Amino acid sequence: MLEKLADYLADTSQALALDLVSPWARTGLLALIVGWLIGMLAYRHYFGRENFSLLAYLRHAFPRRVYWSRTFAVDLQVFLFGRLLEPARWAGLLLSVTAVATAISGGLTAAFGPVRESTSGALETGLLALLLLLAFDFGTYVTHRLSHEVPFLWAFHRVHHSAEELNPLTLERKHPVYSLLGAAIDCALVAPVQGVILYFFGGKTELAVLAGTNLAFILFAYCAASLRHTHIWLSYGPVLDRIVVSPALHQIHHSKAPRHFDRNYGEVLAIWDWLLGTIYLPKEREELEFGIGDEAVQPHPNLGAALLEPFAYAWGTLRRRAPTAAPEESAPQPLPEAQAEAASSLPGQ
Image 1 (cartoon, rainbow, N blue to C red):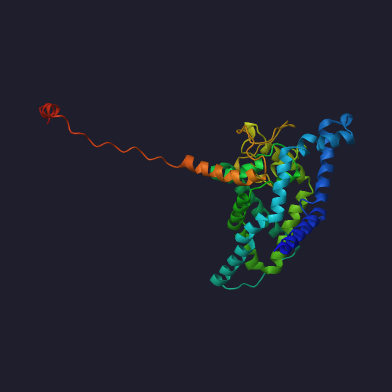
Image 2 (cartoon, helix red, strand yellow; image 1 turned 45 degrees about the horizontal axis):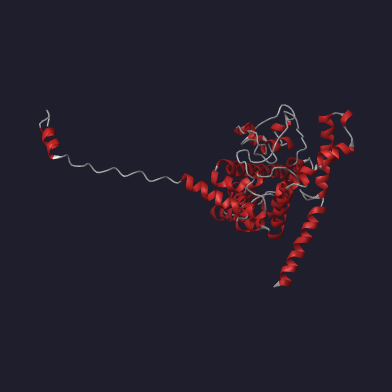
């Protein structure tokens, strides 16, 4: 038993190390370094050339208050818990987009018969990859928005927002229930798109489309996506910020200021926020404080609290929303004899 556990931990640690050094990993070291280099250009832009120096930028990018904070320690604990026990992977096994897409393709074949698979060139594959990217990103928007607007779901998403300082590991500060919700919504919104692609174009094209979609996410990661969970301000400007989520837009989403509440839900594309009225576009650089705005006490000071406290909070939301029993109407009491006689003598009786 101990030998199997040791082998599992060794394999998981090796996979984690490979993810860190892989240039194709969205959260790998290379993507992080590119993000910080872009952040250096942003720092020079916002603070001016005359105030720029490499040492000043490093002090700005890696302050002690962030990387020696209790928040960073919890981020690290949640990250290691997620990578070692892989709750997101188990959620994916329970609610697999690929399995649902395959079932949908099989259902279409049973209902309408097999079709001659269309051959797709580079243009068609690219358009299908874009369609799948839109589906994935919209699914993330829906998951994110529901997790803010439904009190029971907010109980679990609060773990992500209780971070009082942002750093790249905050991306992984997610409760397993939030991951399960995301998998369920992807099965509902993404799997039908993937299933139709599989039905009409076959497995070979589906793999190419998935590769193209993943490449788009990787390119986004190299456009300083890692800065979203930092304090390093970078806006893409009033036009691009309506299309792509800049680091500044997501930092605003984490802000404690009431004017920023429930804004900028998008992950890659800002078009959903723009079209559905949840976008907040900054006119200039803003000073932000992060965390849960309406809670004075940190609810998740350690890993145990981050995993267990949301269940108590969720139960509290259900109890507060439970209807209270209406008081029973009292049965009419018989009138005293004297009052009954008086009432019978009234006109109209």
